[in-house]
Image 1: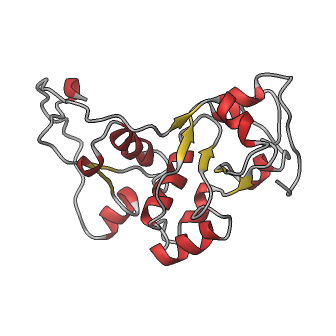
Image 2: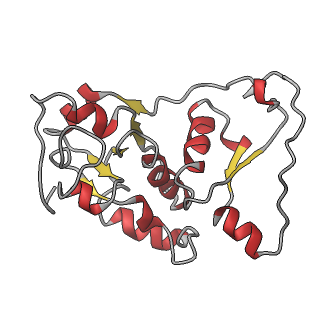
Length: 203
């Protein structure tokens, strides 16, 4: 970040043209490294910006290297062993991928299709309205409390830990604290043929 001219005094606004599914990863990285208040996601992304009549530019900003100092790192990453332990424990595992990948109907990237047994389908796109903005906090809270996220230790995963951060941001908006990210996600889990895989709608 410092090499890109982003210093300790800067507040970053992240945006994309993909419903926040990419920008949320930068938000999560700031949060993970203890800089929660230094990064926000532009709700609605670049389309919301232009729809509001704001201008765009193709000019590249001048960049001067500065210092960016991480804060106290959060303990919000889990590995494969911890996820495997969740299969027999009392916890909530959220799969942020599209439903067809969760159900095992298609798998465009990884060697096996399906989902981690016990995981609940919570596609990241379900956090958004038709305008690609996040749903109201109370709606998001209802979505995730219905799965038990308000009372159970919660971990989110996706294909490679990018889109899962969208679910983590939605949980933050909903006022639900403490979720973690399975960084290896499905790419890691499915790479080992000895690990169990579930197919279909049921967790």
